Length: 355
Image (cartoon, rainbow, N blue to C red; front, side, top):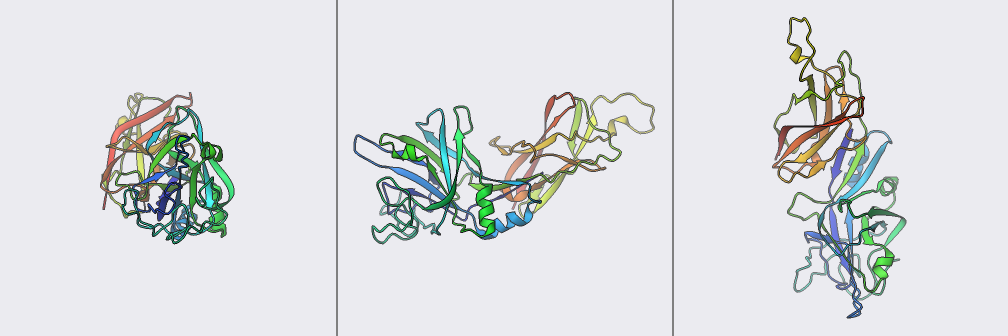
């Protein structure tokens, strides 16, 4: 299996309450509704995000076959006043816009990029978003096609992790790539007493959580050759070719795993029975964890993090483009026995991405 990530070329937030302000360089993307009946205030905040045509073509060329999924991922910075369940809507923007160089804290405000009123530098009160969907203040973006939604419940992770394969397919087929708009549902935005706040890290964040578009596909193969397959929970796993430092410019790296019985059965042999390599079961998966934050950079994912095998050993490929440089990462392995028992192995297999 493989996971490959690309990062935005532009993003910004559109504010109905500050309709001419641009916040293209802000570290935060807002998807909020802060309406107030007390002061008759409409305060709707939507975010737009765009990935370059060149990077989209890279995704198109690197994926294997037609069996793939593309996910939009944004990471939560903070939230306020959320219901136990709620939805976010995602739309395919249908007109190009410019990011601008403003920030929310600017005084005087910067108006040289996309804002609630317009796709670029604000000049007049004329709505420059054609076919825009808004409540009171004209503007707020423009989109076409099918709406994609992500639902959240009480115990769910509140990061955005939504399948946007249909958007990607449209862009590759030739429709306008003007990005994705993220907003609350129309019923929430139109409710005069709605107050829901979601803030996500933007492309300009100084954290390790920038937004990304992540393509996932299954490129695994399973050919054990003469290797026997592990079928017990007392197995030692070792990454045999961990280089410990990997340059960020590296395209991908193949990690190989030696699997050996911790307590091998006795046998008459001239070689050590403790060195007999085995294959992990066909239902085995890998994950990458950030050592410092303990966040899962690539989580166990069926079938997209499936471990392969050839007659030498079990192995998996990692594309380095999605890993932040100058950070340490840990490899985790999970395998499932014939009995259905699932074993997760963490033996501190750590490597660092360097510039």
